[in-house]
Image 1 (spheres, helix red, strand yellow):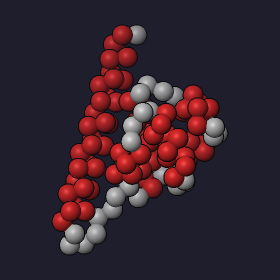
Image 2 (cartoon, helix red, strand yellow):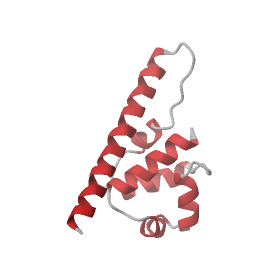
Image 3 (cartoon, one colour):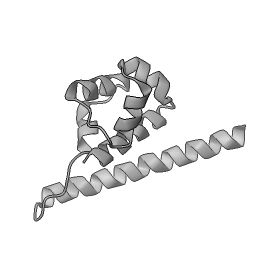
Image 4 (cartoon, helix red, strand yellow):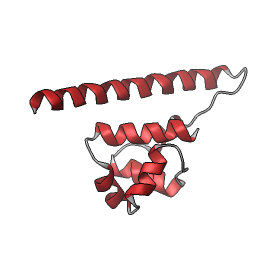
Length: 106
């Protein structure tokens, strides 16, 4: 759960072209703590997730979607998990394209 949420947090930050230092300052946390969150080593509080969502002007529910886990036999949960995986792949693809474009422009 923490790994998916951490990856989602990293990808949202990357999508908005913000570095860890700037976001950490905006959230009022240390850069190292943000790094641990994005690596899935720490679990953010709901207050911190709310601040994160507000910083990027997205509903907190979008962030929470990424921490859904599969439960055996639960079709609705499996669908949510599949959608989450696809969304993470799309965000990762966007990040890759953006990074390539930055290299080309440099």
